[in-house]
Length: 255
Image (tube, rainbow, N blue to C red; front, side, top):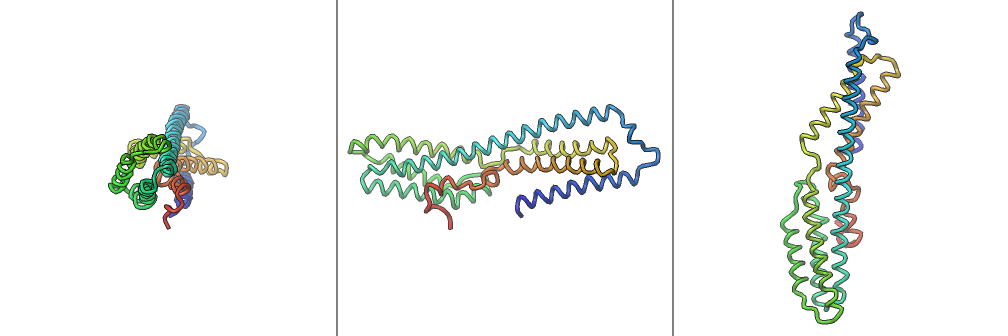
């Protein structure tokens, strides 16, 4: 199911639930029920709950957005380092150059293919990816540069392999969802409580009040959806998560 379809269904359900509860409440309300007699303390509590929930929700959105940007930077850094290795070995002898470039190509193909699928499903990287990176590091370190250009390029290539390794470790750490379960409990429970406090104000069935109640509940649902959307950047948060690799290595793009 499309993410936007999920959002649309959630918005419709939330608005329908709020409007339905208002109608039921009005049907069961007695003749002595006077909405103008809402105690001031309830209005104050509703305001405070709304403010606290808005702060928590804002912090959650900021947190997942920062994690999304960090994940994007990680894949950009890893892909660029692999590209640097591919280009800098140009000054190496043909045999070593071909072997290292083959290692890079094999690692990139595995990363954007089987490993990416496994990472988004399980939240961890593959053992084969570790072996491919080890093979790349071994072949890079096995080079014995002879020309001046090769000597100058050697340390840079070794450093770029270290960058790939560090980015790979960071990518695995970012593969898991950002928000822990207790935060989700607070966000969903707080949203239900915040919307529920609307009924404590004894809203009526006027068009204006119904519209405001529906829009308010829809806003809460939409903001929670944003947190969920960016909570797993490699699965949902990034529009084209493997584009950083395939843009530099077009042949690695899966069919």
